[in-house]
Length: 143
Image (cartoon, rainbow, N blue to C red; front, side, top):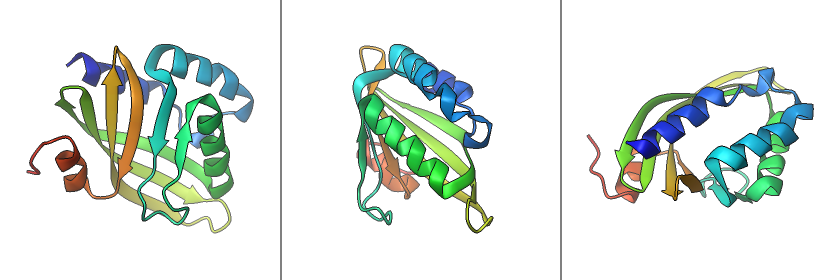
């Protein structure tokens, strides 16, 4: 349950992209990597995203990710709906709520984030479009 609380606190502190000032990113990365993420933490997108299967690693990678999101989205926020304890992993069912920068089109999409936790900090976060696949990745059966 300790891992679930770590992840829950992280989502509670992350502002939506529309509320976040890019000038605050260095300080944001200090608390993210200081309290929640391992310095080499990697975030991995699924292979069916248009960019292929991009992997963002460490502070530099997360800075690239934020820049990419800011280019694509005028608004972007994560709404965690369910957190599931899976030992060294936490599965989070997340609703992504966004609005395209160029198009202005609103988008809502359910995804899952699978966090891997070691020594109280995340070592990886993997994003899945298929919620059942995320559960299976950590050895759980879908509902």
